[in-house]
Image (cartoon, rainbow, N blue to C red):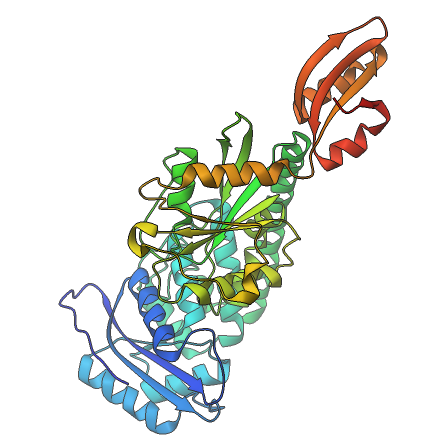
Length: 440
């Protein structure tokens, strides 16, 4: 299938999208839907799609990924549209990259889905941690692909930055000199970036340890990119976090205290969105970000209920969570954008039992938030213990710690010490078990 869309904006690079599906396979998204998603990625990166080509193949060609006839067809599209970029919907091997570069010529930039996502991440990295993670992922992606063309494109780029500098899509990130260094130098840089990220993760780990000791529960927002997580985060926390109708608008995790109907508070964390065919290098590089998900007490899986592929998006997110070994914590499914969808899709029978609850909201309009908060509070209350404790005077340190880590109710000072009621999490219950008097 070929369709063409031309744009008069000369400042945007023109791109042709190419996809292939193996006959008899069952990908998460159909070929046309996957190319539609790739078009959104290209648009987010700053390109205009001027053509697309797709092919059903018996097997992926070991040299050119698509068949030679389809390669010729893409070449004709390049001549017809004046496209400067060809974007493939799957990750190309180094051999594919080399052979296709030869076929399309040095004036045509060749990208795959992974390189495109890396470029978008480079544009959206707003913290030092994010910039480090993007740069690491870019180097690890490019190392096996060091060819003539990267050097050629680096000269065109003139040295971009991880925030998006000059040179066009696929060239943001490491600048000219870094792209021209040899493999040993890139290996050295990868090692240094991993060391820097280890320091960032150690700092984040210390922060999480302090947070855990305060016993404030953590709820993490997860979901497909552009599902509306940041809009929901903003609605629940009443904060002014960045919200945009773009893929991967949120890259760096953001955490805010959020009140529950009872007055109790929890920490809500917004995280990077997932997507099908998420590059392995990105999952690994962004482990520090994903650790916020791994530390959560509850996961809110936010889904765009208005999207035609909503059920496939759910599957892609659950697959990614499984890949990062998400702990067994309660998951709430949150159908978002009900202002657009009207009603939420029906879950397949095999998925109905995996969620502790299902909520329907419109984060943009602020509807459905109170029932969602009630669900969160109910889940947090499960596994908690309301108890009465007695501490001798010499253990006043434990009383002070308890005020920091639990909800303390009635307090009574006696000749022997301090008696009080408190609501304890399961871990705190075990810690204070020897001071337990009775259930009030």
